[in-house]
Image (tube, rainbow, N blue to C red):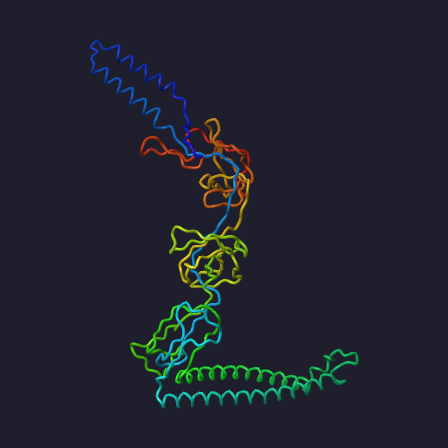
Length: 443
């Protein structure tokens, strides 16, 4: 518990002087009136207040005691749900049927909605032609790859037979480095390496044409009637369309000219909304102290008067650079989440990174740093001693003291203040500052 402590300075000599002066004035006058007595008393009162009241500093103090310190870090994020999937429409057209409602539980492969394509016959034919051309390009690229693969193996076989004959390999199986610089050997080796490089380059061409085929297929699908099924089991949420609405395929097919009534937002979501978690972005300074299994408290803007228990489930090892700021994803699961918690709600997570019980502690405001050394001002018998200390973990309010102080010490926690407005005292007080045992710097 904090208290006020007044360090008093002995000014008895000054008081005696003031009193003798007042007495001389009083007895030297022959005409003592009530007014003069009042004036003298007022002078004594204000003189005493000025000389004995204004320079007596007061301090906020605390007692060093043992207790529990819990170190925490706090970050903000949003609630998310496990196994959540966005379901779009692969077709540009009109919603012809919707088979589910918000809150329905579905299984993987279950019908969700149907779309009637609005593409013209010409659009359908053009999309199909592009798809077939992309398929032909992929087939040609794969054929070339097979040919190059055969060439590579032949070149390798020629080089291998040459490298293992008696001219280029010693009887013990070691390479004959003297002969391996001959043109016949180096040419065979270069032919094999060139064939291998050409084959690897063709692998990239095949991958490119495969991606082009996938794009062409999506564009073709956008012109066809379709029934969309659930990609996973879960609960349906946020259905954004009604029967008869126009919708744009998620591929943003250029063959479609969307009207003002069309939409390309997700049609609906499917997820496991019974097991929400909070995803936050921790800073570089915080992530080193965050580990899976640590307990946490979660507060939500939607429930300002409630606190929820949580536990860290995982934390990223690799950071994400966003405009020069490095952050790490941290996932915190609710230990007992009520059904009223919804995905995307704003949340603040406070993670307990360390805890120590029965350790000496002082308020954070008591810690000062001088020449790189942490110190605390100890008050004893009206004297202030600046004592070097070593610290451990810290909470939002208190810091662990591992050496330098003893239980029961009285310490100063705040800057000195004067009883007279506008008068400032030294931050080390007017009672005399002493430096305690120990060395400053390097600690």
